Length: 441
Image 1 (tube, one colour):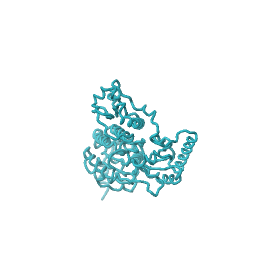
Image 2: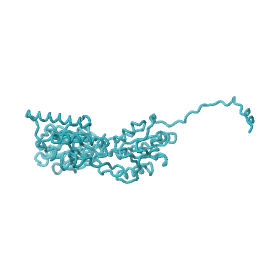
Image 3: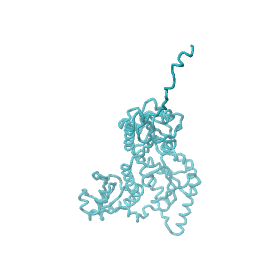
Image 4: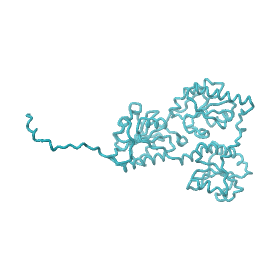
């Protein structure tokens, strides 16, 4: 899954730094970015198949060789491109990229690419590209679409996802909804408003789909609904305002392209999204999946339940959940285990020397980890994770260079621990004095 980490501002360095740029000028794969995407792809008559990737993503690294092979096989027939969507987040956001790698096919209607859902071998990708090309040619032969000019592509039909807001429905739909709204106040005679209209409509459709209808785009004709315009101090057109539950509206200050609007809406969505799940390490699958799926695994080793009781353990878990909430825009997984339950994991991370609770952060692709040296508190953990985010802090290689063997354990039942019950022995029939003195030294 995708949290807002994909859209976070700084680029991780140090522990989190991955290999940047999978493709070079020597490859047949065209590296795409916001500067050349419109010219190369959107204004092109060619069929494009494009991989959106992140340098730290293990599945993306595995795909690289097949992607190069695909590009060479299709050279001169179908264009094969790649976008570093970790670096160019707005471009990924514009096309609804929420996980890596995402492969999209840009055919006749470049504004609505198709998701590629097939196999990841070069043969499967080439077959899909040629099938799409065959369909495109048939459509052109029959006189159907095939025009390439992006500016000519109609956005009719997408305007239905822009909610028309009025004096009568505004409070009910926007203020009482508890959801995020971007609202454009416009005037029909305003030239800038007319220029914004297709961008606003296209963004509304993309945002509706990508946020599962949790972020909405609306529009108010301020010449008709003057009460609303007056209430929110609208002086010029278009004016865009952001409405969030329980907060005063704020002015939208971003760009006016669909990509800019979508990126801001997705940021707002991640700000208001649920934090990632905090999972107990119950078996090897939990650890492997979390560390494979996320850029970083944050793991806590908590004291034995007999040492803390349920209340103590819950206080530690609450601190972790607060940190997961704070850092939810990052591509991080959150795990915990009980001291002694996963001894090989502890040994591979050198945890025992610092006592419990302990915390580590693992980059499973590089098999590097860092240990929390400060306090297991909101302040201590925040300083630890903040330093990792900017490339500070010392790291080490995971013992053995691979994730260790993980034991399968039962989930914590949420209760206090109980001491093991010893068998009772009746000593009343044992005459201890009989044996004394019988053994000569």
